[in-house]
Structure formats: C-alpha cells, structure tokens
Image 1 (cartoon, rainbow, N blue to C red):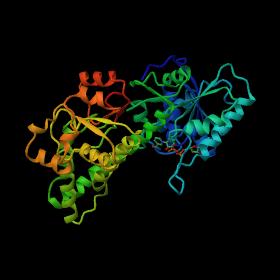
Image 2 (tube, helix red, strand yellow; image 1 turned 180 degrees about the horizontal axis):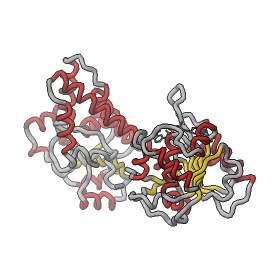
Image 3 (tube, rainbow, N blue to C red; image 1 turned 45 degrees about the vertical axis):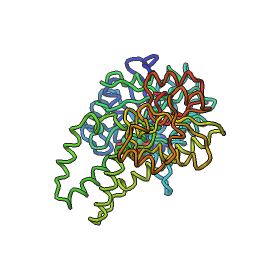
Length: 430
Ligand SMILES: NC(=O)c1ccc[n+]([C@@H]2O[C@H](COP(=O)([O-])OP(=O)(O)OC[C@H]3O[C@@H](n4cnc5c(N)ncnc54)[C@H](O)[C@@H]3O)[C@@H](O)[C@H]2O)c1
C-alpha cells in the first residue's frame, strides 16, 4: 500500500455517470467538497430532479446538499456524456450492476457507458488522458475485460474505486468513510482519484486493480456472514432461554480475538481440541432443538474443503521427498488433537508419498494421554517419519511444506535451504 503519486487540483472537474443511490450521493458530496461535478443519467427524471435542486430519491441529508450545490454552481446534470468530457479530470462510473437470473453480475450498463466514454474520447482532443474510475461493484477482472476494450484507442487510464456507502446513511458514510480503496497501475491516475477525497478524514488504500475490485466483494460477503452468524446465534439462544443480545454484545467486548484482525488471514485449515469439538456440539444441540443453522453447519465442511485443497497442492508436487514443518494444529503448542496435519500425512502416505515431519514442540517420548492416543491411532508408525531436527529434515527433503508458522530462526534456515517451499499458512509471504 503506497501513498498517491500526485494529487489533482484542489477543485477537480468530475463527471459522475449514473445518478442512482451511489452516483447521486457521490456527485453531490464531491460537489460539497468543492469539486465541479456534472452528473449524467439516461433517466430524464433523475436529471431534471437534480437540475431543479432536488434529490431524485430519499436519502437523509441529500436533498439539502443537492439544493445548495446546484445553487452554488458546483453541481449540474445532463442526460448524455456528449461534449462533456473535453475538460473533465475524472469520470466516476456509478451505473447499476444488477443480478442476472443465474446470479451473475449484469454488466450491460457498464459496457454501454464505457463504450460511450470510449466513443467520445476517440472523437475528441484532450490535453491529457482522462481518468476513468469504476465505482460500481464489479467482479475482479471486469475493468480489464469490459472497460479496457471499450476504451481501446482512447486517451484514458482506468482505475477501480469501489463504493462502501450504505443506503439510509449514505451522505454520512460518504463524508466520514469507513474505507477508501483506489486500485490501478498508473500512479498519476490513482493519485487523481485518491486526491478527490483529500478533504475527508481517511487514508486511501492503494492497491492493484483486481484487489480493489475484490475488496468490495470481500467486504459485502463479510457483512452478510456477520449478520447470518448473529442471527443463527440468536436463533439458538431463543429456545435455550439465553438473551441473544447480551451474548452478542459481550462477544463484541472482545476486541482482541472477536472484533479484530485475528482469524482473518487466509491460510491453513483450523483444528485443535476446541473449535471442531465445540462446533460439533453446538450443531448437534441445534438439531435436537429442530433448528436449522446452515451457516454454522457448513463451517466444518468449509474447513474440510480447505484441508483438501492444501493436501491436493502437496500431492501436485512432482515425485520426491516432502518435508513437513509442523505436526501440531498450530505453532507454539504440542497439542495434536484434531490436527489437520495428521490427516494430511495419512493421505500423503496413502498415495505413496515419502514424508518426514519436523515440529519444534513434538517429541514422541514426551507426549502422552489423549494427545498421544490421537496421534498413534491415526499414525501408529509415526516415529518412522519424525525427523530429529529441522536440519535433518531439510537435508533429506526435496520440498518443504509449512503447516505452521516457523520461528524467525527456523524461517531463516528453511529459506536458506533453497528448497521449494509450499507455504500453506502464508507465514513467509506476509
Ligand atoms: N446502493 C448501494 O447501497 C450501493 C453501495 C455500494 C455500491 N453499490 C454499487 O454501486 C453501483 C450503483 O448502484 P446504485 O444502487 O446506485 O444503482 P442504481 O440502479 O440506483 O443507479 C444506477 C443509475 O445508472 C443509470 N445509468 C444506467 N446506464 C447509464 C448510462 N449509460 N449512462 C448514464 N447513466 C446510466 C441508471 O439510470 C440509474 O439511475 C452498483 O454496482 C452497486 O452494486 C451500491
């Protein structure tokens, strides 16, 4: 993440294509920040509404801002882009991307508006490339697949600038943003879009085009999962006579593990003595209460799929000895109960792969009780495959697989071995 390379003039000339919930709020709030904004919409009602100083739909606070900014001459509207691009600095595309019948994203409005921009640009003369920013929600790759071709041969740079506002408090969300993401490859274009928001109290996250497009999907699905999770916990609390609000409010008090970045890093499957056991118990009790909790029921399946993808990645390695770093379910523990690595080893051995395992906290003669039982019942001959030291394992292996985060010293040793590393926990990349 870097800072913008340059900022546009304090007051930029901005075209907002699409005056729906996102576009009209964007256009009006950018005008409020001092930019000169022209909103374009094919719907004459929306255009005349803005020109009359009225919001085309209800959104708290919007009507006053539209009126004030139209009166101040900073906000205007038109039915067509024709002739509007000559002196514009940035075009923000805010057209709709509704669902198609099969669930796919409808890109007809985006294609059409991008085509119109391309036609306008190719037919006119501009002193510098126009910055075209896609603010509509589009799937990763859409800018490259739909907008780039439409602008081919035109003097334009494409940027992704997804919108995060919520209807019902859209003006407030715009003026006090939770997140500002700008994606693209051209530093001038990225800087021009990020610079539109410099008056706001938010630090732009500058990322690649596809990352910017994906972040919007990650955010929306995260929000949906949060709501479904809270609702399923609530559904279970009801018949148990437990106050759901109190449970969730208390859950939210934990800002170390619950409302935090903890557990939000893509990596390996979970395991251990608590998460699988407790999820199973919760789902079993829900079934006995005749409750269907599809989200919570699917979590173990999702985890199993993640493990299978990891196992397949290792199985896809060319033939050769495989060194596994980590046997416990995570680093800094010798707890082997429900460690996903045990299942991975079973499958690798079952497919005839040659493995050695090193875990800095596992010594076979020191583990006992349920820990030992779990390991020996799954891998009765595990002692054959345990390496005595990391050096021994690295000297033997042709590939290294990380199933837990190594210490800085161990990471150094693994890197310096020069062996190809399959980093299942993303420990060495971030
Ligand atoms: N509504 C939200 O809360 C919200 C929040 C964040 C992101 N988004 C995303 O932003 C995008 C816009 O959403 P919305 O709710 O504002 O949609 P909307 O349907 O309310 O508005 C889209 C507008 O674009 C206009 N339009 C279509 N084709 C056009 C063209 N060729 N030229 C000019 N205008 C044209 C339509 O007439 C319409 O007024 C979508 O991708 C949506 O997923 C929406």
